[in-house]
Image 1 (cartoon, protein in one colour):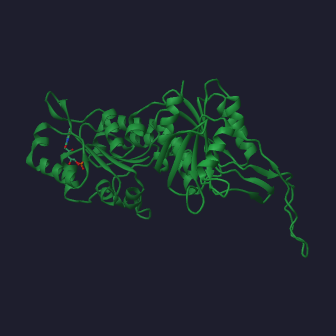
Image 2 (spheres, protein in one colour):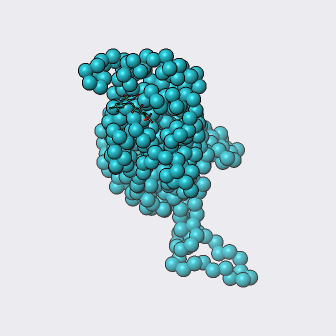
Image 3 (spheres, rainbow, N blue to C red):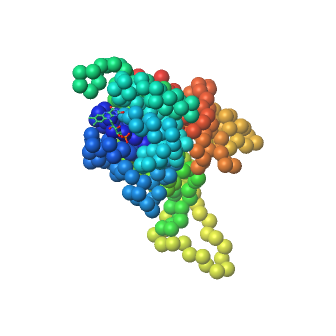
Length: 413
Ligand SMILES: Cc1cc2nc3c(=O)[nH]c(=O)nc-3n(C[C@H](O)[C@H](O)[C@H](O)COP(=O)(O)O)c2cc1C
């Protein structure tokens, strides 16, 4: 999930550092936008080092990038913690006098504010009115905790603990239950293959498929958020999907192994899978490959028709791993992307595949005609190894990913 963490200038700004670290550990990409006053309390280098992303406070810091619009539109969730009385007032009146407030107006994702201030400030009618206005607009304002404030004072107005803010904010973003707080894959090692393999015909051509890698990457991100150590075996991901997983500032904190062909994917999955509790084969793997791959480009000879390309069968990686189990007790999950035809429906084909492969779970989805591949949503039926329906999930690929992990967790020893 891409999170914007706004930090305004209260004494509790130091807790934003812990919140940032927590969100990063859960696998989220976090961009911190402090106010000028926040930087009086915590320095920008701290936020930059822990987020791996640049930090700026002003809309004029990167004019060509029109930051506030890019950041606002690209975010899945905005959290402001701590939110000062001043920030609440500016947000309630729609002020846009720094990068944080301007970005807030450009954001259409869920917004969660965690106010923190002295009890008198929190209970002041002006602050109460601002909070009421924000709540009416759909902003989620977390109730401050009660306890020790700055100095010797105690009372309501204290910033809740970072764990509590993260849990509440992620559940507001619909990432709650599973993605947000439940660390039910903590201590587990998982391997997810994503994308589609390419089988070389000659040095410049290949046989490929339309898989973008979106579902596999969503599975990897969901597993990270649930506490797993993740290896993503990435086969030719679409560019925007690659951008999500590229190592570097703010990206998903999983190990990424890039592969191209089915043979490379098999090698990578088997290597990483030897230590894995779970292997999820979400990549679209070619069933066949050209029998021979010449070193030179195949030339068109005028007057002669195309030379036939002889295909040979690729190893069935899913069936192989499911039958062998690279590690005792390993849970193996496959995907069946089906179109349905005269011989059977999407589910019929999925059932046949489930029984043949020997995997613990098979997620069956209908593809083709704008469905499944390359889209942001998915609709899967989850079958067990016997072909019986054990779950159904529809929604974003992240939601589908979490439903699948729910089913996996039940099968882990
Ligand atoms: C030591 C110190 C602590 C402060 N703590 C808070 C606080 O906890 N909550 C708050 O609303 N304002 C607090 N303030 C006041 C804000 O810093 C001030 O209102 C500022 O204008 C907030 O700017 P911002 O909302 O742009 O971050 C504090 C000020 C100082 C000097």
